[in-house]
Image (cartoon, rainbow, N blue to C red; front, side, top):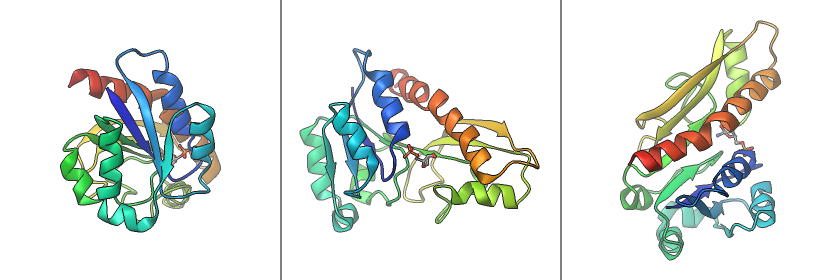
Length: 188
Ligand code: GRF
């Protein structure tokens, strides 16, 4: 099975997932796509020997250019890891129930537009939440509302800063995301 990862940022989850499947015969990360030419994830993919490509915003609106590349690489499954662009309907229809996203909070709380990057952790702290966590879910036209695949929580202490929360959430991502992907792909 060939996975493509879409990422817009640093790519620590992308690196973690690539490394996890390196030893795996049945599953591999075959492609990394981004919407930003300065995204550090491209460095990581390059260093790890995974083909990567950048597409400008317009291409992410239409989707046909992207779909062509996914087909060229025989992609079976798409993983969003810190991807800040809406996936075009063309791709949603080409990959029904085959695109999952990770959200660094306990959806449905703290979901939706603008709740990405560390902003979500600031909102969690500001709201005085007792816990936060990660939600891995399928995506559909309404983005953060696709079916949840996996969710797990971490405590938020009154003394925690957004950075403290981010650190705990990242730890959950690195621990769980690759295994959840493996389970979804093997369970299919
Ligand atoms: C992660 O916290 C992820 O949950 C969120 O964006 C961040 C991506 O981090 N969607 P990285 O680019 O994988 O380091």
